[in-house]
Length: 430
Image (cartoon, rainbow, N blue to C red):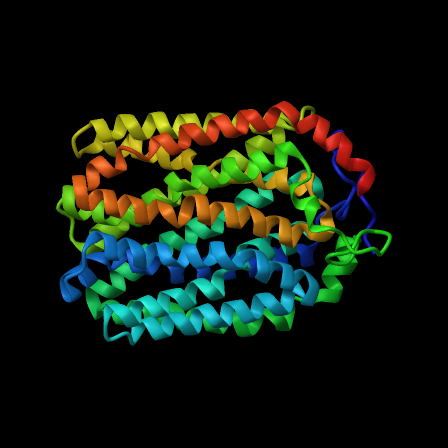
């Protein structure tokens, strides 16, 4: 069993291995790969928006629903399914989830109508519902706690890289072979990875490396109360802040391909490549912002929260300035800055949630964070933006997104007021 690491910061629980291991990195790579598959299945739709709009005569609101319904299902089901995974077995649950969303993506490839596509997208959401929360719980359990913000950001960046591949690969395949082929290729790839995952990742070996308590139970063996997920003021603000920030971060990836198609007169494949490039910038920003947060928090844990608030304000300013400019290189540069910062809050928020909740409930804790992400951000972001776009145009709808980032920054600053005290109060309980 791995040796327990000393707390890197005052008040942070002493759980997790002292050092990284090769198997830990293998676990990370496989979970990262599944997360990429997850988001490829989710975001390939956005690359083919123009084709579906033309073929089925859809409105922007209908397109937004196809995109947002996945996040809506994730938001509704992430907590119960993550709680079940904590109790039933995280590895087994992850493999089943991946198989389900991959089969649902193949169903989308065969959809003959908007209604059938909507059913397929709902099932994609059911399959993906608990993957992010349970997957990150598995990842952080096999790494030292000092890397939590970096790992949370890097893992979540896999979602952005999946969006990049989903939009770029989906756009390329759709342009040459049609939108059905784009769904089929991504569904088959995800299904293959789902079959390999449980052959390599084993529950008992993860527990041996983690050296921590079993899921849903405290170190003494007693079952933990779910009230521990909301016990502190700062963790409640962290859930809300991270969720509201992803309203902006969720709407932009959904609508950037359409924005470039309409305002830059780009064909589907070129619009997909441009959006994919900005999503790649966003993923790099998540990782680098997470690394900066871990480094800044070595002596003062609350510094990561100041950085998170700064990322939100910075993204709001850059996006506002970008959308005041006409299409062109200056606008693209500012959009790049906004995308670099807009999801930089995920690493600090993930570290806050991990530090403020019991390790045995980390699957459920990250489910709660995912619930906030989807119900406050990823689900309403594309849907509300689409409805506003139908009324006032896509450009004016996108100009409203910085408001959510400013609100998120205010929530982060509110969480900082009690963060250190909440860490000290939690430490003796873990």
